[in-house]
Length: 111
Image (cartoon, rainbow, N blue to C red; front, side):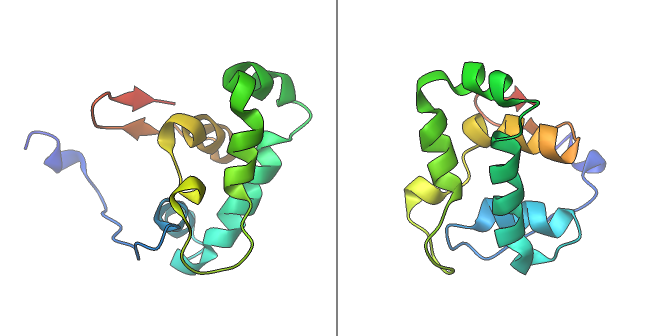
């Protein structure tokens, strides 16, 4: 209850396996249907030459898995392995969009 006064906006998006990407798209002015752009931008972030060493170290043995999760074959519903996972995507989101990303949950995480 004590945090509610700090919440400025709630975005309720379609839950089709792209929902995490839809939220980011909506908050960045692309509209909810701009989720493919977010996937593309995060895909470019993970291969950015200035940060490739950082992501190699951060993701170590599952970098290719994270990159693969951003690539889709068609629009529409996505399987769970294509969903946005904050433990993996949090750093990409924070770096790409130059934001502080806080996940309130168990555990709480800040990127």
